[in-house]
Each structure stands twice: as structure tokens, then as C-alpha cells.
Length: 408
Image (cartoon, helix red, strand yellow):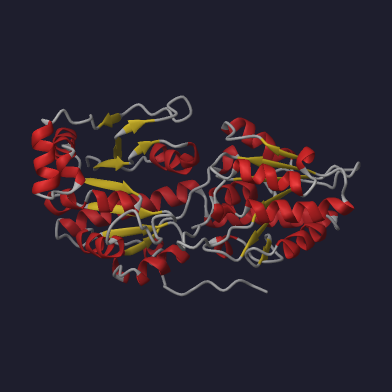
């Protein structure tokens, strides 16, 4: 039986923080896939053999203005993307298009309405928020939900938010981030004999990642652990502000902003660290995390994670058993947790092992890829008025639409 052809649409392929998308696209085996994008970024980090680039339109400026300002056509039309996309999908014989990110799905609405094949849209966090830069975003999301057979969410918490945005529950499926465990060997950690605790965080330097809370907690932690160091892997618009905060707290010489690291270097940092911080918080636009990929990667290596009861994080971390959870923006509780982690060698080794087991049981890449491929088949069958055969695994991934409750 010939494999179905799936077009993986991502506006930019790929930004440094989108490694999880690269892993997912690259791991597909049950379907054939090719990437459609407007621009290729970081090709040396994300090599992929089959990419179709939507070229910039050479449309006559007069016609462009007519379509945009007089006809009030949406951007996909007046920019000339519509016909190019249709031609590419027809040429490649695509049976389905997987659109990464909800706001991209909103941009493609006019195309989705007209294309005779199905699309699925996956939501990752920032796309389930208040978007003032997109007019009538909630209304357009509801239109998007009506047009696609399935909507994919990275976590139960995101599924709950999509439900509140108006997504029909029968269309929602949870497709969690998959972690390739063979790339993240377990490290049995012991306390450093010289007291040189190595703390790390890996994320974009943006408000919802809570790096300022991490710095304030680390400053308290250093009072009793003067040789401790804090490594922050990532870049973002808050870097200068965070450096100034570290300086004001008197810890700048022991805080290292190392930027986005290649995967091998990031692996080395995971392996050499003793604890991982990720105190996510909800900014004013309600932009929440699903389950941060770096949290799962850290857990896979056996690194003890201290995070917050935010978004999908409690779906991965059982408080006091596979990691630690504190309230958002509470640097004092986070510092207290860091002290507790360092108080016992058993916490480092036993909790780290349980964290690894959690990732193996719930976030293993091969399992999540098989589910994703089954969702593709389901969407294609629904579009063709066929009755899809749902496996027990597929059924278990239909969201239950209840807020997860973190253990106390």
C-alpha cells in the first residue's frame, strides 16, 4: 500500500528554538513528507533533503495594491502565495498538510477553505494567547477549527485552552513532544565534593521563561553555596536586562549567558549540571507553555528539575517524586527548593532516575511519532468520508478537558 504524502508547513524552517519540530518531521516513517516554507534558516543545524520554498511574488505593484487596498484580500492572496502553494501541493501529490502553529493556520485560512484535501494544525503555546497583532484572532481561530478535521495540542493544558477558544472537543488530539532517548544518555549525578554546584536553564530569553525569577533564586542559593555557577543557554530580547539584574544582585561573575548551543554542546551542559531551573510564568497576553522541550530533555538525562505549576509542566513533573514545582514568580520558594535538592545525594540520583523513566513512558519519540501518523491517517479518512480505524493508543490521546492538578 502506497504511503500517504504529508506536506509539513512551517513559515521558517527553522528557528533555533524549533529543534522539536525538526526532530518530528525527520522521524516520520509511516508517511512520506516534504517541507514547505517561506525561508530556510539554520540549514547547517537542521539539514533536510526535501524542502519546497515559496518564492516571493513578482506581482505587478498596481495589482498588488488593488488586491490589498481595494479588494481587501487577505495577505496570502495579495502576496501571491495562494497559487504557488496550490501548485506545489498538486505537483507533489500531497494528501494532507500539517500546519505548524495556529497563527500560521489563520494566515492560510483562505487556502484551507478552497483546497480539496485536509489540513491539520498543531498548537504549541504562543499561538494559544491573546494576539493583538492579528485582528479578530479568536474569531479566526474558530473559523480555522471549523475547517480542519483535527487540531493537535502539545499538552492537556493547551487542549483545555483551545477548548475555551471554541475548538470542538471531538476534533482535539494531544500530540506530545517526542524525545529521542538514545540521544540523551542517563547520568547518575552526585553532589560535587568541592561545593561547585552547577545550575542551568535552557530557553529563549523572553518573559514567560521566568529567567529573572531564576536569577533571584540563584542569588539566595549562593549565600550558602558560594562556589555555585549558573549557566543560561539561549538568546532573546531580555538578555541585556537579565545581565543588568545579575549585576545588581551581585552574581554576574558566576552567571554565564552562553547563547543557543549546538545540540552536542547542550548535551554536554546537561550532563555536567546538577539541577535544572525552568520557572515559567504567565505574561499579560496569557502566553503559556505547553511542556517545555528543554524540561523533558533535562529529565531524560536524569537532571533534577525545579519548575513552576504553569501550563503543561505538571503533566510531566510529579511534585516531590520526579521533580519540584513551585508557584509562579516565587523566587523564595524556588531558592528553598534548590537548597532541598542539594541537601541529599539520594534526591539527585533517585529523583533523576524517576524523571528519566517518566520521559521513557510518556514522551518517547517513537511512540509520539506513531500517534502523529495515526492522526494523519484519521484526518485523511475523515476528509474522504471513510470511517477511520482508531487504535486503543489513539483513543487514549483524545483530551479529557480537565485542568491537571499538581500534587502538593
